[in-house]
Length: 277
Image (tube, rainbow, N blue to C red; front, side):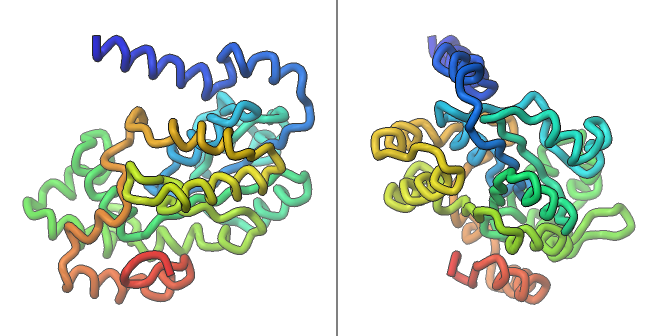
């Protein structure tokens, strides 16, 4: 019975996510004023959480375009082709590295931007565990050749040019321009709510800011409904979905190493040694 309920829940979320649920289908054809929403997230910063928050709103749904990366943009004729294909109410998710031309084009066509960030130390750990468990990851063999978790963490902090593994500083730097691109900066720690170690008040405020940014209804009843459904482990890349997980794994030496390599970028993203500042 448990597996059946889980399967039904997954299937229902798929219908909601792509605008195919009974409540969303009429809105897709009747309403033409909804925003087209372009989202950028740093990998492992809570992409699924942001998508779920958006697609639980009755007026938004995900496009069939997979998560956009620089390497797959040509399939849709670049950003211009993606924007041309987007319909009112559609949401595009991306891990698009910052380029001034991208930000400028989004502003020119009036497509609101949402940039999802997370404490970079939690991003670090999510990368370490994802690479470790995924045999298809190109860095899996190199990482797992180091038996100690601590050594794997150091490798991901430092990166390795020999295998094209980017350092954490490089990852953060390539996305940092989105912080000042005129979009809404959403923080994982605000959006995740009590099940992920956050607070209900911050979650409600984050959801309200998100929908206000998109000029969509954000009444208390709708916010409460979305908040009650938001935390989910149904993403295939889900591990724990918790804030501050880094404190369990990074000893004082690793924390110093991380700040030595990324300190200026941590400040730019708004995170101090204890968390969001």
